[in-house]
Amino acid sequence: MADQRPRYRQIADDLLGQIRGGQHAIGAMLPTETELCAIHGASRHTIREALRLVEEAGLVARRQGSGTTVIAHENRGRFVQDLTSMGGLLQYPEETRLTVLRASEVPSSDVPGLPEGDIWMRVEGLRRVRLTTAPICYTTVYIPIEYASVIEDIGQQHGSIYALVERRFGLQLSSVEVDLSAGGVPGEQAAMLDVEPGAPALMIRRRFLDQNGRVFEVSEGCHPAPRFTYRATLKREV
Image (cartoon, rainbow, N blue to C red; front, side):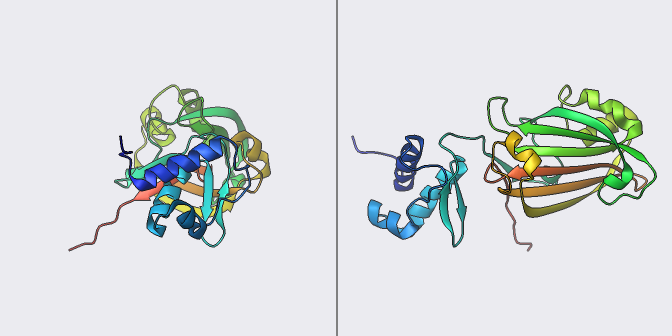
């Protein structure tokens, strides 16, 4: 029976089999798009679609002008979050879980964008899609010391940390400031994220403000590429 899979899927499966079989070492470059076109007798569009699937499997990293690099021989827990509403920028989906590693008191001057004079809690943890997969994010969360008791709810109750604070202390989220930037995985986080220090990462910082305009949470997330992706669909206004 003829293979019913789309051509790009066939090529992607071939590449995945080669990588998982060890034919391409971690850190090695895959053949270029031009070379893959010749090898498989396929168009550039087909090859790009195949490489997209391999990247989504978490086995390679692609960078324009630099080619495709093998980063793993097994799936490392890539997660794509679709932004169908602004809520997607405020929190992670419920299928992810944050495991707290440590919590400590810090002066507010250690919290990005806050003045001196107060004591806050710094909570550090790893977020995974499943406990058996590599982490998709190293998270550092800061909350005022008076809300420290919410830490016992993290991982035990559904919802993001800001929502836990709202429920426990009667606050109301008014606005969120979100900064996204490219960066490198800090050395002290690399081993826990199972990547090399300085590996490419998506950095996300969120500042949560209550109904009085007071910041009651600051979160910083380091997401090693290509394990976490924001995907948004933008429609033209008419």
